[in-house]
Image (tube, rainbow, N blue to C red; front, side, top):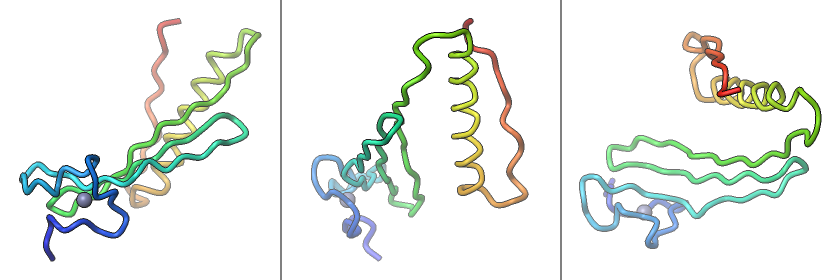
Length: 105
Ligand SMILES: [Zn+2]
């Protein structure tokens, strides 16, 4: 396999730094965007020249505009996103519960 040759999913443009031949190069997909009922989700897939794959996700979600539980809603959202990622990305024995930390409020 030629690591500098872009895989089918790679954008094969300025987003891909693997094409330069640099050992630090990374293949990158075009951003995948979804408008959702809660806001939006953007995902970009990457692969370095050692074959490691990963994804970056950016979610925008509306929170309650009023009420005292907005911070709790934000915390619950982050916890459940973390749990979903753990369930899919980690093997069963490496799924510890997320550490909950309090925000600035
Ligand atoms: Zn590429």
